[in-house]
Image 1 (cartoon, one colour):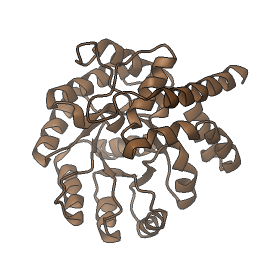
Image 2 (cartoon, one colour):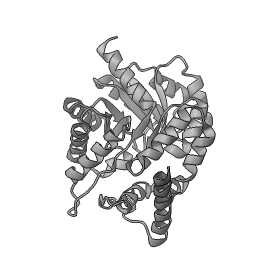
Image 3 (tube, one colour):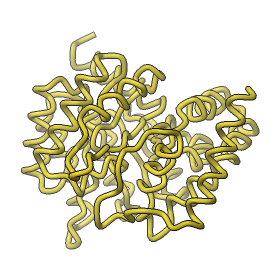
Image 4 (cartoon, one colour):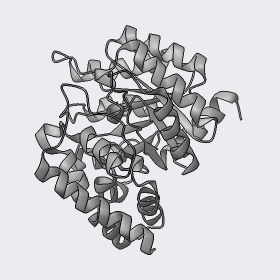
Length: 309
């Protein structure tokens, strides 16, 4: 097996597992807390999270400067120390994405995850072209993070057939489209991954996807592992039961047009004794008291279940 094939196989294997997206901790002055980020990454790697997506959406990619993204990439790669695969998230303009990818690869990233190009005037097939160009450029495997159901089946097929695209992180609830694109790409080696976290993972698995992305893993990695294990063994009843306890957690994250997505994760970490700072604007900086009370109940419940197990 060639070195390229080995890399692709390693990334695809990791994508079949849990792709955890670490939060970005901040110091009181608003700068990145490198020490706390390193601690978080070491904890996630020790918890055997299969793939760490450095500077993903839960890491607040779009609020970070380019140099801060590089700092997150470098800190994650160093702290993971080869114990978990690291996918460095890149994005914004194609030029910036390539520059970030080049530096991340030089620092030792195992894969590159391309954020969905968010230009309001982008044509869907040209957004697919963005990923294809990035995959042509990258010397490590690429993961395409698609957050739209505007791509045609033909566009998705182009992505799945690219020799350097290891997988597609499908982050749309359009399950009919997912089913159609999976049927149309049985001959493609790319992995289809649930990009909507644990709550959607059973439906995605039923359609033929494997693995899922997770923000919850920052807080309760053992719960994410249990859900993954249930899905891998086809025990959908067990998976649903495990998801029920964290359904409220995921529902809170969708508030304010998903503006509370990272806020909920960061505040849950704070409730467990790890202060990682607030969310940067334009995200929801802090939950209100009612939301915090609901979150506290969920955290305490899941914590109690873990202690009783």
